[in-house]
Length: 276
Length: 276
Image (cartoon, rainbow over all chains, first blue to last red; front, side, top):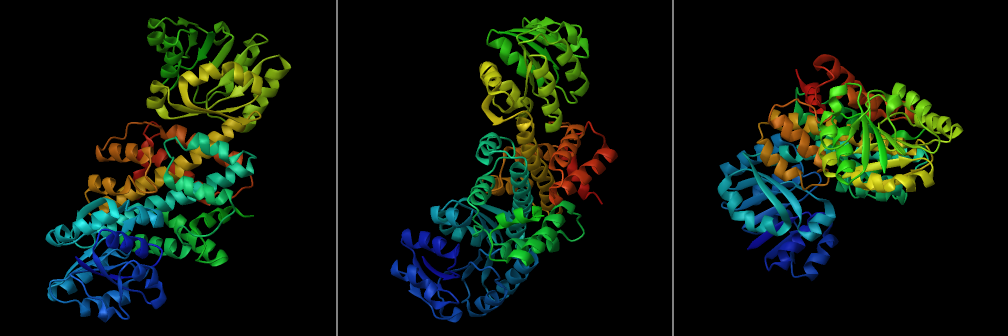
């Protein structure tokens, strides 16, 4: 299949690599032109602008997709399936699907979870909303990138499922950071504590990741505070009237840690809420 | 070995069963006398009072152990190892260890995680604090009940490790409940959402348990709100000056849900924070 790819960052590049590795033809674009280099070396063509991106399927993977999606929808030929793998507002996904429909372009929301490691290994969880027929057309591509590919319903429902996931991530992140601080405060050997809690009911891959980084004093991002706070704002917006007092507290603390330590830090910097 | 056992509730009974099954001699006591019946059927002797509980090792498993432990320490013969599997304050565990020491009784704190299912299967995580030699003596017993048995250091450190675990449980519980409410609020099929989020970074056995109960509308406890709020108070106390703003929010909401719905409800009742 000929796939247009927009956004070749920490997630987009390894995802596009999976398609190239399976023999698909990829035309890739990134706002910073040099960033497509590694994909071009693997056989992709580079597109200098969004308008030059061609493909039966166009996949976008961007931290803030709004502007680019407007342009993608303008440029896409009728019959194209556009798959937005970015995490964004369900309401926005619904708007794009409706805009696409008027021009004969199917727009699926298909945000992913699993981080750069999952992207590289093709083990992402991909949460899809939108036209079922379009989903069936692109499913083989999605299954190259993800080991869990689930269709959740109409446009926006993939985004909402992702926000449900991010609600879990948000609470678990703050809890992992506060638990780590408590262990250190109490003079425990954190490695031994991890041995005790990892097989427990609240053990998760996220706990492993955050505690490893914290033990190394490493605040480099697996998941940037800029994106964490963005997701928390999207959750609040999608929740509307629904009270989510725990998640709201995480959001408030995350904004504070981001302001103090910078949005490029990883979410393990949430441990700094315990700084005195 | 001859083991005295005090507290044969949801956790204590299946734990004591594991010792009987391995051929140990068990003398069991429960405040409510009839409660030892199932163990007696398996070969245990019943003790009508704490004073009548005999054994080289005495194990306690109680929701609120303070009164009983005072009596256990009074009655225990020198040379006994007392193992408190209850979850309690690290400061209290330190006091008991010092009291025991003066009488030639080793007191270990050895709280567990894994719930009734883990107790039955012998797959608990057991977090031990106290004298290393006493730990080595009882380790074979602990390994019948737990698949993860870790010594964390001096008296109280097992309790602190447990409170670190409960910090993770607390945050993950509230996040799971709010995430569930968001999925329902957004009209998603919760089973499909679970399929997407379970293999993700924040997926955990706790998530499976809580979402299953919520999907069935079942508020029966795996873990009672009475014990959840107790643990949250212990965390606050052990944290002292350490700020834990996320955990504090969980504690505040848990007290509110407990007041409104009753302490006998399971922690999945935390979903009620989202009631409008």
